[in-house]
Length: 405
Image (cartoon, rainbow, N blue to C red; front, side):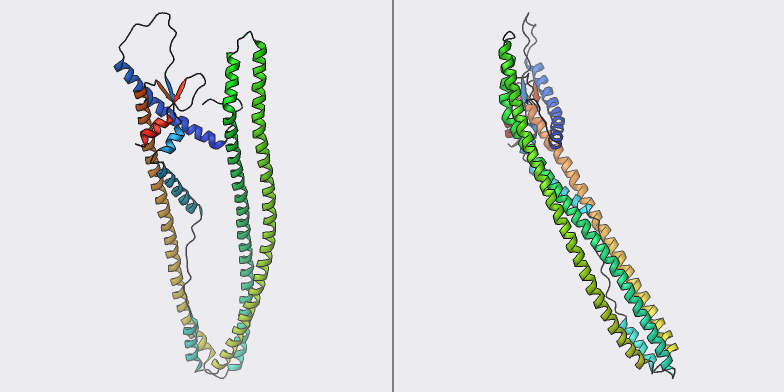
């Protein structure tokens, strides 16, 4: 490819160029093989002419990237790339088991056992009732303390999660803006380079064609070439500077929005925690009151010792059964999550293998058609980039027409 001085390309352009050069080597090798076979079979050997200026090779050039994207099967590659990106995004998110706590209500069975045993209560009711009331109040206090501690931990965890999510959102927004501006800089740079390519090339050719004795003309052409190159570079630099300022303004806006969102989040979580504490306190007090009233009536019917023994035994059996059911549900949720991830990984491997196979077929088509064009038109060399010293012919459109037949 012919370009003016000061050609600067971004990472995406360099990666595309590296891929194009790799593909060009394969096409060039196929074309040369075809051309060499044609030359040896169709041209008889002849003695070399005396004192004849050697004739350069007949060279053709192909815009391999454009030909690659014009291939009829390239949309399939795009579809696979989108599918692979979607699968990568899904796999990048940690898989959380979809576990739903079984709805187990032990209270009816426990109350039934208590009601049966309370019918045999003995006259130690008051002392037993007082002990029971004290134990229940202590349990209610511990339950409330545990709830507050758990709520504090969950609130902090929720704040951290949402803070990280906001940070990630801000970071992604800034990265997206950066990428968009980088792409804009690259596109603008390519446009300016293309705009000045031919004028710079014309000045270079005029300078090279000037006689060595006409130094004044050569100096004038050199000055024009330098001025035009500076004008081109100044345009690119000014555009990049404007985009850099736009990025800084955007970052400032995002940071201000992030600070306000964090403040709002803290207020929201604090108010929510206060409401939950008040609601839980009322719930525990109401339940304690109801339980004490119930116990007072129950302990008039049944001995405390027998009641506790029977209820404890039955409660332990029920809890063990409930725990076993919860363990089974957790194990099933973990197994389902693992199976879902394995299925995604299998889909990703299949998509990647299909893309590799499809790319191999497309590249093979391009190699074959490029070699056929080289043999058809008598080209000695097929390049994917032009060189200033070669008289080249662009056969990209012909190659695209062949692969679309």
